[in-house]
Amino acid sequence: MAESSRWWIYLQERFPPFKNGLLIAVFAASAVGYTALLLPSSNTSFSLTSSILIAFVVLFLFFFQLRVCDEFKDYADDLRYRPYRAVPRGLVSLQELGVAAIAAAVIQFGFAITLGRSLVFLLLLVWGYMLLMRQEFFVPHWLKVHPVIYMLSHMVIMPLMALFASACYWVPDKITPSLALGGFWAVSFFNGLVIELGRKIRAPQDEEKGVETYTALWGRSAAVLAWLGAMAGMAIATLGAAWPIQELPLVALALLFLLTAAMVVSWRFLSYPVKAWAKGFELLAGVGTLVVYAGLGIVPWVLSVR
Image 1 (cartoon, one colour):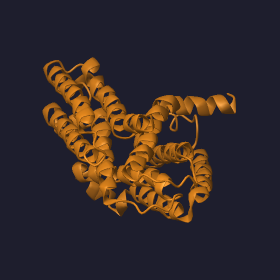
Image 2 (cartoon, rainbow, N blue to C red):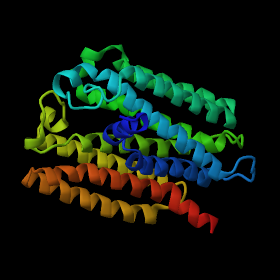
Image 3 (tube, rainbow, N blue to C red):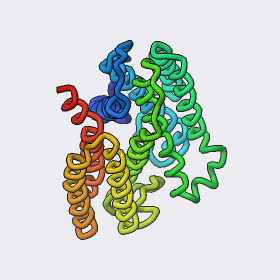
Image 4 (cartoon, one colour):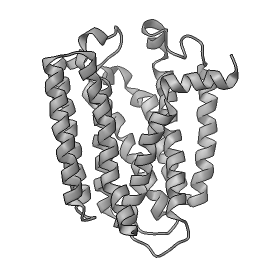
């Protein structure tokens, strides 16, 4: 098999570039756009488009590195329970993935240093936390029996990446960041929870031995309630982030439709726990990501420019 074909198959199976790329692009553009709305600057030392592009590339590679970390962390379980996956079946090796992750780090460093030394510090911060996640914070067995703490500890990576993306705007223009940015970082934390919970809610017939889904761990009702709680948390954080940029009406309307859809999907899945409705949680998590980030940092910024 050709080298390019082998890697393309791996990406399609484990890190779909177009699906992930769309969500990450919206995340990056929203973080930079929201920061520009909150911290307007007349300094044009670095264009907003360039900041968004660099934020996107670095964030995309962050998420790829997280996938590589998971491949290393889950290798033993994959060999035992999921031999059909790309690494256990020999499509790519862990060593190759490690080299790819290091190559990605070199690219990230190059982009970060272009914007300023402060961004390199934030890059190291994200890498450091990522390595802690890879090592399960050196308490893997304890975290395994405390899945809620496991999930929450891993979601901290989301606001850290949001911090990096927002810094792509304020570092080159030497602007002092505002504490109000914390609202956007909180949105990222809850959005990460929504995605994480949504992708691990499954219909009974789709549960796999050795795969710790939240429906298997907690039961259908508790898993759905946890997902709805994360959606509610994201909605509250989003409203809080919309306040400083004076976008409450737009964001509140979008959230109304989003939360209504969430209630419908939850009710239908609990009534009819089949694959079609289980997939609705992951789908709605993706739609919610697009809606929330577009409503906070993309649409308002485009309107402000016009």
